[in-house]
Image (cartoon, rainbow, N blue to C red; front, side):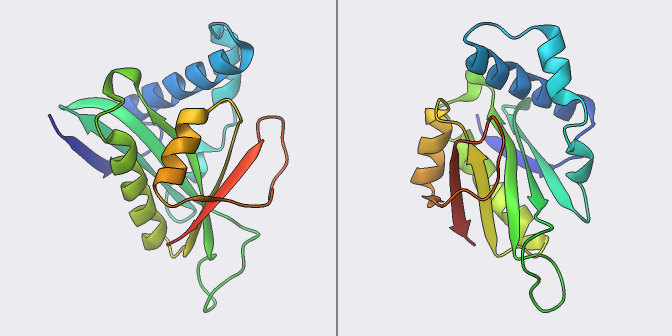
Length: 167
């Protein structure tokens, strides 16, 4: 089986289900128990996914063997410096997720590559992200693909580690 990555609106049926699964997993890991429907709905409410479309961002869905299996977004950072009077120099990775059945198949690497390409198309020259201490697999994926830990650039209850990569 192979991976196919493609830009997709974040509110399509497949993208919406992937985003829901993402919030289910991160909330379940945060609470140390299965997340409730209310907790998942809270994560999806006003989560900013509407910004993950041109001109402010992009959203990618990965299909493995034809099945929706991964997703992620890039969002241009408004506070980043402007280069040549155009797009911000930095974009942020967000909602990076691979469904459990497809982990270990190269989907994380393929998704990061597609998201980096999307960021370049938006004019970004750097990608940044924040994550949590307990998401060790994600931190390992980022480090393996050239992301380096950086000083904190944002605040929030789920922001514990920060990474960046020059494109």
